[in-house]
Length: 86
Image (cartoon, rainbow, N blue to C red):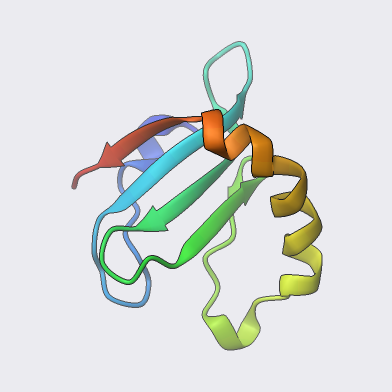
């Protein structure tokens, strides 16, 4: 997903700004893997294969998300953080 597009996103719950941690980008600098975090409620939304997973909590499948997040744990601690403002 293009950074330009990601900057247009906000938290679906409280409409606040998101912080982006980039884990993987392609040669065109599209975000392939990363984590969006709400600045207000601290909910986390992973970006997997270029797609941000921003479903409401009741529809999220944490069993599918957690292995990816666990794999990223080390990368997230070293990832560049970007505050995304609307």
